[in-house]
Amino acid sequence: MQTGSEGEAAVKHAFVKLGWGAAAAPEFDVGTDLFLLVRDQRLFDSGRMLGAQIKTGKAFFKEPKKDSTGQTVGWWFRDNDDEHTAYWINHVLPHILVLHDPETGTSHWVGLTADTVVSTGAGVKILVPSGNTIDEDHRDALMAFAASHHRTSPWEGSAWTGAVSISTSAMLRHALLVPRLVVPRRRAEPQSLLSRRKPPPWSSKVASTNWRPIRT
Image (cartoon, rainbow, N blue to C red; front, top):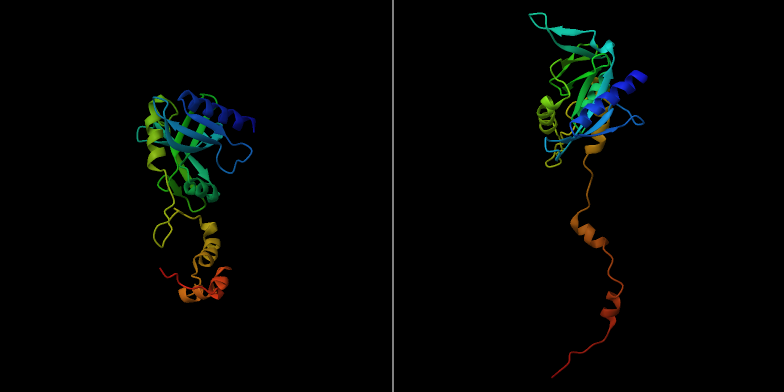
């Protein structure tokens, strides 16, 4: 727990150095360690937000990926429970995964999308590039990810596509639930609706009142 807290504090500090707003969510952590307010070089709020999941320690750097020259180009992060990955990808906010090395004090990140998540058959793995660090040189890349993967749920038309992907373990539950939500309901005919309308309380008095037109 102490190592995780140290990493979260270090990553938060790195974003604060960029002038970004950073709020921790330790009490309600379900897959998001930090909520980030995205700001440009002028420290103007962009109106965008990012979620960040942080993993700290040498254990997360034990599976490097190397290029043809033997240079490390990144590290594989494995998730045997794809529900966590589905949470990050389906979240209304774009999320990044951060690997923090407490020995070097460096944090590496990757944007979480369906394209960066690789299925292994027994879970998923995600490549965190070694060149993606949290600093001024990568502010634009972080801002670009926040902007390009910002999603809103479309409600127009007859089909809702807000759920980008559904984890395998949740498919059956969704298959049983969705038909109950979208089944059409019978609606009363307009004439029957009119017949149900009660006349205003003063209508009977007006109808029973004797009146004569005024002659001039």
